[in-house]
Length: 372
Image (cartoon, rainbow, N blue to C red; front, side):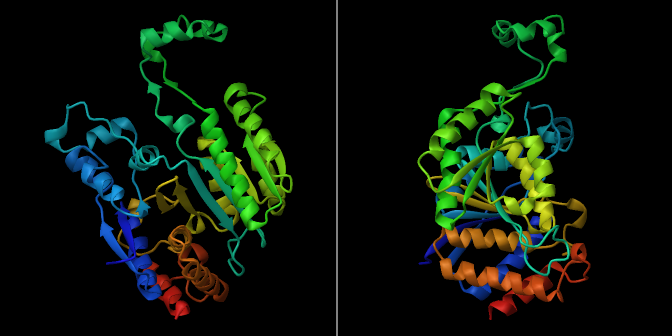
């Protein structure tokens, strides 16, 4: 019996390409694991009306963690049009299966490391080594939305004086998305960031919000961060607004080590951080809760490149390194990162985004050789 049971979810588009390359690397590592394929994504939305079938949820519940490729998501109207004819007009609504998994399994910590590996011609600046801790289950991605706005909701909101200017707007002309923070949610993500900083010897944690304008939700996050910071006297808490943070990361990226923020701000700022170290071809992530972990690169499914083995698999390899750390396969994780760094530094085998002509699988094979 294998030591680890890993849900293997390639998903859509180039997710299949980068996962195939990853299997080359994992087989070279010789991880004692059983990889169990699962169905997820656009194909199953179109054919079944459900991008996250119940059989896949059951698979996740019976594995130690999940390695995931990429997902295709489209606006509501477009998603409706692509349903199989027999599923049309059945009141089916597309939802993001990844967001659903995060919430279903309470994967509240989204870690997105951004490290500039020496020799990468796409690095904005050498020496960048920071990580974004993004709250993963609340905020604007909670999924509490309305359109048109129900009359009962409008009546409830009318107690707020700033709703007066909307009182004459037809309800069908109002769309509402709720930004929901809880004290527990804020505490969990901030504590995760401080614990990581403590474990890795980082000297600062920067909370990134907008409390001067989004006073109640961002305000709650900042207030909880200040309280928790008192438990870590050797780590300094910095506070900055999300818009200023975008500027400071361009100007002085070496000043920052650990950033912590809410769901949507974290989604945006981590893409900026990813670009600092080469783009989404190097942007990895881990979705971690108390009992489960899902690991995915942050890039999309890039349908136009699907099956061409053109895209950069490095983000997927770095994501795999995060999974190995989660599984406490520390030595394997260290060897994998060393092999990734060696291939990048040599600069001989590289995909088109780095100015090369190598395929996705060729990069996987070269990383595997370095592991040897």
